[in-house]
Image 1 (spheres, helix red, strand yellow):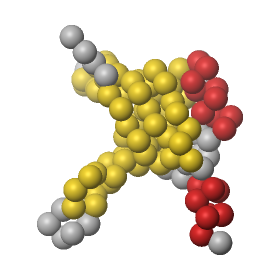
Image 2 (cartoon, one colour):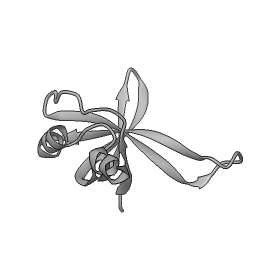
Image 3 (cartoon, rainbow, N blue to C red):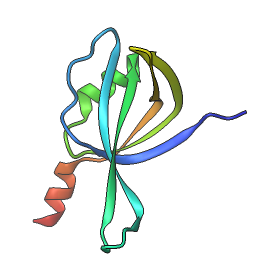
Length: 105
């Protein structure tokens, strides 16, 4: 059996502090098709990063940076509600917002 996913999107905010070797970031992931109004919709997906992956993301990434996530889905219970979590095994730093802004000048 296989439980693996790949996401590519932009960070919606600067990474917050790491608590208990864990960092939670939100990725804005644009869908690859347009809706009935002709607009690409965007999904906002929370991703859990652990230890070294969390530290590197906290150190080197900022709001607007494009990153790739390879990870898995996990289920958990919080207040008797079943949650589906995206847990990253690997993060690839694809481009920074600063590079994109410089290209526009």
